[in-house]
Length: 302
Image 1 (tube, helix red, strand yellow):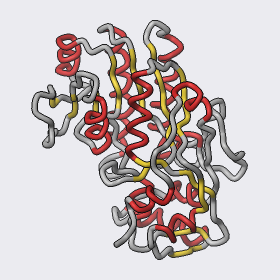
Image 2 (image 1 turned 60 degrees about the vertical axis):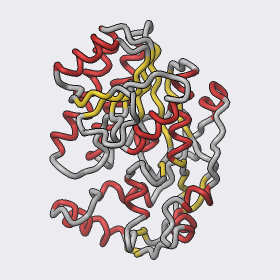
Image 3 (image 1 turned 45 degrees about the vertical axis):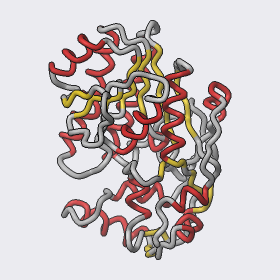
């Protein structure tokens, strides 16, 4: 079962898993491109209808992708769907005999801090909400899943924390930023950033299911580059601003609905937030198939 199957990543994962597995899709939105013969249930994971589906189909594994990642709409609604929705999914997985559960988190949970070491491992503190309160729901979802993993050892729970992901179908914050006509950069800062192609993230999720992983795993891509290099590769025209100008500007434009990110996002284009993905490679043999050049080509301006 895949929650959030109607999104870009959910559709890609369903295609990948259908090669060798029976796939069941769940989403509160319609799955307009559903392949013939693939069961789909348009339900909200917080509602009783979702429990009825689980009770009826009894999946052996569940991949939870049903999150709101953008900042459109109210903060309360986003928090409720992400945190309460995840708690509901996890509790129902335990209650109805699901044997494996994979929860997609993000490397953003570590936070972008001036004191960050290079290539943080899975034991590094989750400081994402310290200077970026708008993503506290993302940090809480990760913490919730890890706590559930240790509490319910009979269910193989896996939390994946991938680096920023780019591609044609999967909508992400970094993709939105790079596609802006004049992406803001911070004067005097050029942090190293890691990237992963959406197809490689899809493969990582599939491997987590097929290998029956339990634990927390960083998922890194083919390498890291300075932000300015990434912007040059995709043909962007950055707009450099000093922090004392950019932060209040983003605060006002975000609150007015004119800019897609709150000011806390500035730290991710200011400080390095790189991770070590060795644990996942050792457990699965994962190797990204897309190079950095190919990743940038997927969002490059024509």
